Amino acid sequence: MRLTTKGRFAVTAMIDLAMRQHSGPVTLAAISQRQNISLSYLEQLFGKLRRHELVDSVRGPGGGYSLARLARNVTVADIIFAVDEPLDATSCGGKQDCTSGKDGKSGKCMTHELWATLNRKMVDYLDSVSLQDLVDQQRVRQLQEANNTTQNCTVRVNRVAGGNASSGTATTVPGSAAAAA
Image (cartoon, rainbow, N blue to C red; front, top):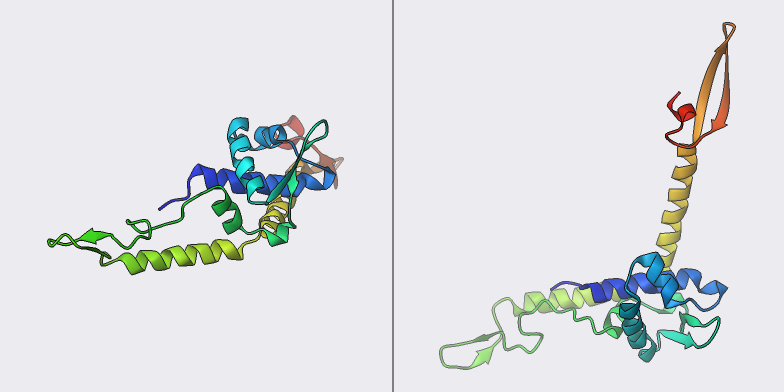
């Protein structure tokens, strides 16, 4: 049981789309470049997402993709299932024929219910996380990174001139001579 790149890439691309669609349709080429995902792979994924009515496409110049629903109404489970990502921890694929006895009859293995319960919990969790939740998390992360970058670029420079200490603030690029001072 594991989420493959198909599901991961689909969720990543949908976050990218949701964050940028306010400016109009978003091209797959732009998503491909920003997220380092093959354009042909994105085309396959977005074909499935469109068939499941999670995205709309606009053809022609200025075309691209936009969300078909509000981001708060799209769950991670919707995205994963739209791209045919299996989430199954059972060895039988949910068929309940995990084991066969000496008599040739098949049945559930001793741990079937454990893995089936895990499947339900995974789906419940992924169904509880909206695309909007992920967009909000990403925006907070970007703000934190921007603040950290700004803080790293501002350095206090203390100067001693004629026995009097004065302090000033100078903006420098990390790694510059002034930053090293």
